[in-house]
Length: 95
Image (cartoon, rainbow, N blue to C red; front, side, top):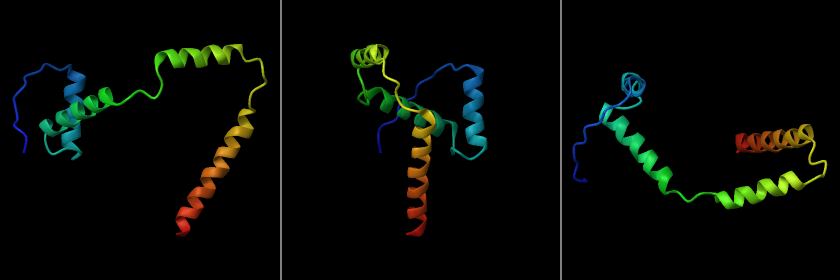
């Protein structure tokens, strides 16, 4: 088990309320567990590699702005997605 250290922090009332609510509803066994989980999530998010760099996002944005094509029909696109994932869900239900 890792060595634990004590850290005293001040939190806004809304955050304290959220932590207490998570414990009261049984989502966490203790306030300590809830705060540790939140910090663990934050640390993992900070260390995760970015999907796309800011420079790449800017280049993609400029490319989209310069694109004069009609693009995709949103209804057709989303209908296709719905069909795809409904079929996937049906196949998972079968077995």
